[in-house]
Structure formats: structure tokens, C-alpha cells
Image 1 (tube, rainbow, N blue to C red):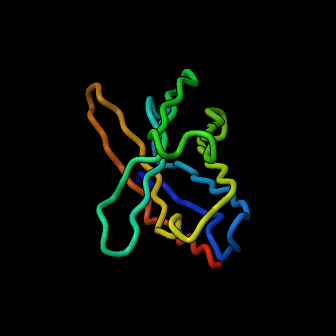
Image 2: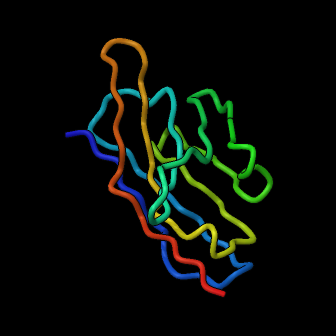
Image 3: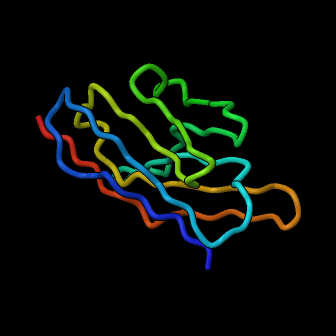
Amino acid sequence: QVELVESGGGLVQTGGSLRLSCAASGVNFIWPVMGWYRQAPGKQREFIASVTSGGLTRYADSMEGRFAVSRDNAKHTIDLQMNNLTPEDTAVYYCRGRRIVTPVLDYWGQGTQVTVYS
């Protein structure tokens, strides 16, 4: 059974930092692409950042600078370091694993809540 499990969410004050982690299991390969997304109440899910198995990163324009994505292929994990958080960062944060060659796979975690208070 393929699973992506996020952890590290919680309550943080404005200006604070959090580090999210996502652990993948149930596959016998390294996910070619893993990424982070978030969904705030009443808004669509939005892309934050992704990283390939080779370490190539990509960020949403509004996220680069405060957020940093990294992964450990040996541990099948991906992390998201978030700094200088504001209440606008309050959302459920999701991990995603994608494989675009056969078999094509696209899995999401259940999400972890991040709440930033002022």
C-alpha cells in the first residue's frame, strides 16, 4: 500500500518557523518527483515547491526565499523548511509523489495543519 505521511505541522506565532516532513512507503522505487502543496480555507490547493530525485528544485514565485525543500532518497522523505511565517501561511500542507513513466503514479498525503497566529 502506497502511503505518504506528513508530520511537523502545528501552531506557530508570526515570524516563527516550522519544518514539515513527509515519509513515503509502499513502493520499491525512488519517487522521481516529490513536492509540497497547501490549501487554505476557501482557496484552491496551490503549489509550493518540488524536488526531483536528482535534487533539482522548483519553487512557486511567492514561496522562494522563505521556504526550502529538501529530500533524502535513502530515507524516502521530503522536508519543507518554512521561515518567517505569517497568518497568510495558515493552511493544510500536503505532500505529493509523482511518477510520470509507466506505471504512472500520483499520490498525495493526508495533509498536516499549519496555523500561524499573530
